[in-house]
Length: 446
Image (cartoon, rainbow, N blue to C red):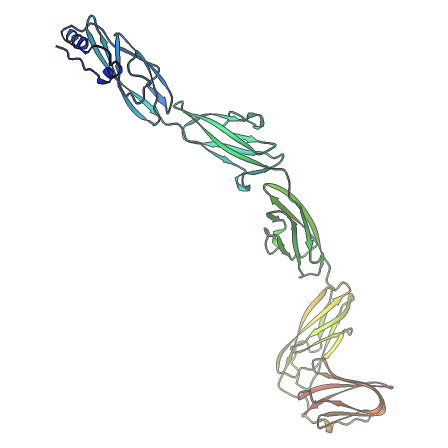
């Protein structure tokens, strides 16, 4: 005898039917030979998430389907299947025939494939997903197993069915791509492309537009840009800041690109590098050592120099004379820096070294022993007294490095006194200017 499984849900769906009749139906089917064949027609045995599949049963009078959670009904010859998650689902349908009594069962599986995932890369990402008005950004749809693409709105795309497309919106726009994978399942992705309608403003200010060799100028990009990129970076301290320091060796034009939300504006400025004067420097010793009470002469040749600056170890002398007499009072290699300054303010710089030995050409002596027919220098206490046979106009005292350390003018007498209380012991040069000219003497101050 065949036993007919009876779904109790069937009873709940038809509560008014006579249960005795069902018992008779059960007995009739149980003692009747099978004569009907149950067949099921499926629209497909695969689906995508939330995709509906039509199922059709035939060969019997009544049908009961399983998996009622994913079927729109379970007591019909045709049903619709849909699942919200991917996986493999088992479906069973029971067919009943009342006369001649018969029953049959068919079981099969339906595979639900996941919908593809999709991400959209944008070439505008580096600029906060902005493009400048009139520019184009590239969008690319990425995902596994993707086989078809449809972009919208298509009106502002270069390829509405490609995996990549160029977009050129006039205003901020959300672009949607619908993708289909090899299973036929679809999904959508969205990327917003923002449009900047206002390019930035930028102008360059320079601390100076004219420099000398070795000089520098501070450049500032003024405006509302958020990023800055300078060219000629090899002569800048940095190349991507609002403020940079330029140190060109030749006249150079600098450009800065200011960026604001993908829009660029360029400004330029030129830094002129003027020529330094051509100068040669020689010294009389040619490297040979001198004694502490000897002199060396520094000679400069510079046609375009207006004046010279001598930087000694402990003092500085500025003069228009191309010749400088020096007598260092320290032993060793004494470095003297000679600056020749041209009319444009640029300098030529040379180093001169005077070598000094611990020796004297004569015996050191006190000032009061120094006598001359035309000039007498006498040290009394903290005074240097000068006397000559003629009227004195002025007296200047220089240290051995050429710096004037004391001076008196308007003497109008044949004698003068200079306060030496602030001077240290050592060798000094006294220059006396009179109506007969200038006379200089070297003295040792106790």
